[in-house]
Image (cartoon, rainbow over all chains, first blue to last red):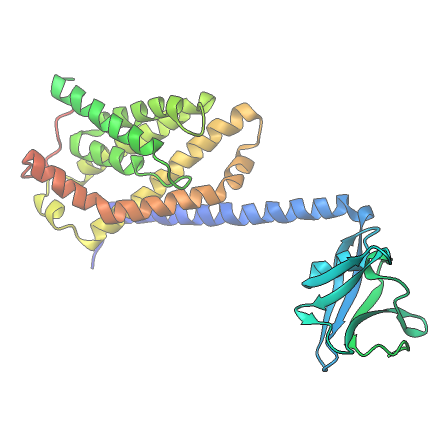
Length: 152
Length: 185
């Protein structure tokens, strides 16, 4: 099939158009990337990374490393960023009690307990998750277990 | 311009403005197709006039608000599309068989032309926005990239699927037997 000069010119314009559009879209994402990097730098002093592990007690463990949270963020808020959390606020305790994580509910003698990683290994969380303020780069584990009040 | 052509221009403008004002996804429009078609059927100047007039009225009535400083750019862009319709017919020359049974190449030509003209329209209107806003032109073009993609893609589909069907229908209504270039108004 032989194409006329007219067809070739028009197809050339069409290809030029698609090239320009690809350039625009690439430029758009490059700009978005640059804007996000700028924003991240802007908020560098207000955010921190934490590592959250969800241990279902059956061999399944989910690690959410380098989760980005605001400075002063409590553990419950940070956990809600990486999982679906059901909890009840107990006014008498002045803290929240986690009832379920990712639809795995406290049942029988098994509860969701949380630990923090220290120089001596895993330690039980000393307070309710919403009362515990995270530190930068802290590592936390939620474990579905029969509470034994000793290091796992 | 005689009375018939003036009446035709008024009716086509009303049609285009009506379509422009109809709720629709952003940047999906058939005004370009109609202006190109009218330019093709009734001459480049007539198509250009329709495009300019449509965008002039649309600039005042648009649900997005008064077009303001962009309006002359929109008028110029749409006028160019109307003019291109007439010019394309001139380039094609008289060939009645093509209109009744266009080849795949012709359909592709119209789709590719639609893509190019839509891009030119978007570049013109983005420049019209960038200059008074003090935004660098390249940034304005990049910021509107996805709107341009939607605009180009929808026009490629509309032109490719509907243009020659509409040409045949209008040709039959007007009793045209050939593709001889129409006399300019």
